[in-house]
Image (cartoon, rainbow, N blue to C red; front, top):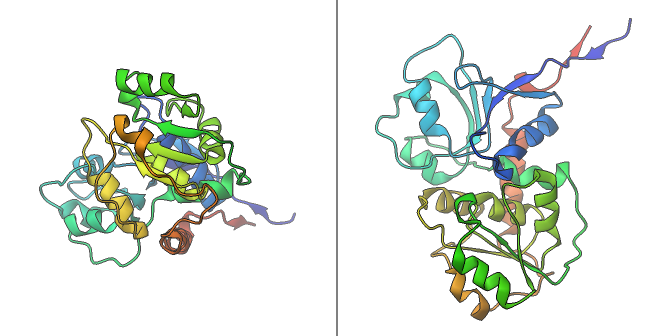
Length: 268
């Protein structure tokens, strides 16, 4: 008999409490890079952690040595944590950005959010459709100020982050411009080369946005408020992103730092 690929599923933990396309693309991207099927796993049963601000969950679960040592690949912090000893009990291939690394005392020079690889999984030709997409954090989908903006001009299109992940990514890729308070609204826009702006993430920690921006070398200073969007000066929708080299460096690191042991192997 000839050799055949090992199709043993990889166990990945991703956040499922509320439907959110940014979390939903984590197993899709992992399957793309590993060449293996991916299944959801509990926090103590995961082989790998990928997309998400989940390292504080890792800290709670791996505060002491366990038989299992999961791989951390592109995961970030939601907020600073007290105590970083848990990093001795996991295998860190890559974290999302330099702020996460600094807060954990890690001396790393490469970073990357795995969401930047979604364009390789679901390719989209860049053909701007004249729409300005708004990707709110899932807690802000029904915001009254957002609704007023949508009612003011049919150029504005809300893209619900709780929708089907592939549909959401396609909608982002087709817009002239994206404003997002969803972190992965920004990440996915970057993946498809869509100019985008940071929308004020009301009630959300800003660490994850700044962490991601630092990873790609983007000068993200402060977010825009919804009511200020109509006066924003937008770039040409086909203009290249000024920090594209940083995106490319993160993509290279995501592939290069992915552990060989997690890739599909050929079994006899």
